[in-house]
Length: 269
Figure (cartoon, rainbow, N blue to C red):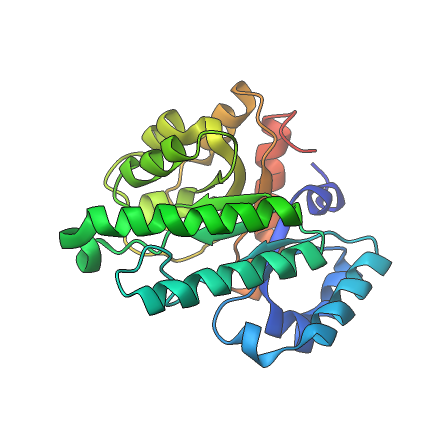
C-alpha cells in the first residue's frame, strides 16, 4: 500500500504539548493524522484556546484525530476515594477534549496494578464499575466512542469482567499487541479469542518481549501476521494507531503497517 494511502488509514501518537509546540506543522505537511496524547500535566498546562487552535488547524487541513486519555497516576478503581474522584475527573475532561476534536475514539487504561491492588481486587473492581458508569454516561452524551486498552494485565480476566458488566458495545477494546508481548502471561491469540469481538481500536508497535520498547512493527517479535489475519478474517475495521515513541520510526512504522494492510485487504477504511 502506498505511504499516502497508509497515512489516511493510520493515526500516529503525539502528545498534545509536542503537537502544539513542535510537530503540528510537520504533521500537516506530511498529512499525518494524530492520536493526541493528554498524559501528565497537559490538562492543567493548556487552556481551551490552545486546544481550539490545534483543532482548527487540523480541521482546516482535513486531518482527523483520535485521543489518548491521561494514564499516569490515573486509577478509576482506586481504593482511595479522592484518588478515584480525580481519576474520573481526568477521564471526563479527556472525553470533553475528544468531543471538541470530534475524535474517532478515545483510548484509556484500566489503571490496574496487580502488585498494588491484588489484596483488594474485589473492592477495586466494584469501584471501577462505579467509575465506568459515570465515564460511559458522559461519553454517550458527548458522542465519543471510548476504548479500554490492555497494559499490565497478565490475562484477559479483568477485561472480560468489565465487558461482561457492560455488554452493549461500550467500552470497546483497544488491543495493544505490544503490551500483550511485553507484559502478558498469555499469547496474543488468547487476547484475540477472548476479547476480539470488542475490538474497535489497535495500538501498533513492536518489542522483543522483555520491555515496552515501542519499536516499529516488524522490528521485534510481535506476530502482526496473526493479528492482521485475525482482523481480516473476522471482518473488523478498527481504528489503527502507530505508537512510535521515536520520531525516526514513524515513516518506517507506517510503511510496515502498509505492508500488512496490503497483505490483508479489507481492513483499512
